[in-house]
Image 1 (cartoon, helix red, strand yellow):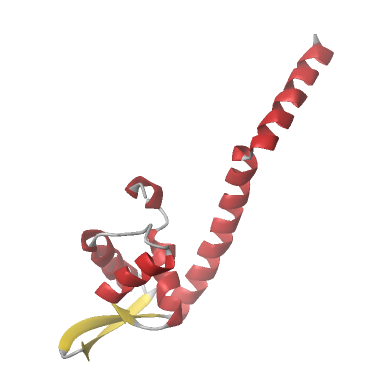
Image 2 (cartoon, helix red, strand yellow):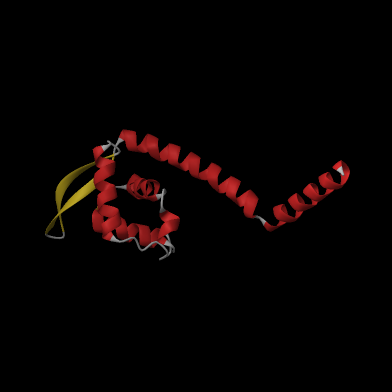
Length: 123
């Protein structure tokens, strides 16, 4: 998937993955990959700075835990993060509906006919 397509959506993706359970960074990357059917192979250089930023603004909290004998920072969604995720989901649904209505092939043909008809009537 084109990395530019993710721009502006990374926060929602990360919050969504953490909604189910607390995870460490690598597990978050794996969850994105799995939940997207392999389409979202997001680099660590994108994920870790976003996680730290989300923690700074209060949407995530973190703590160190030992996972498989290794110390890892585990991230958890906060109440504020849950509210933000709800807003992100609503915004995404609205965005997807609007873009879908524009990109739909039948909408293009119908829209062009309406414009042509309006021009003929005005002329």
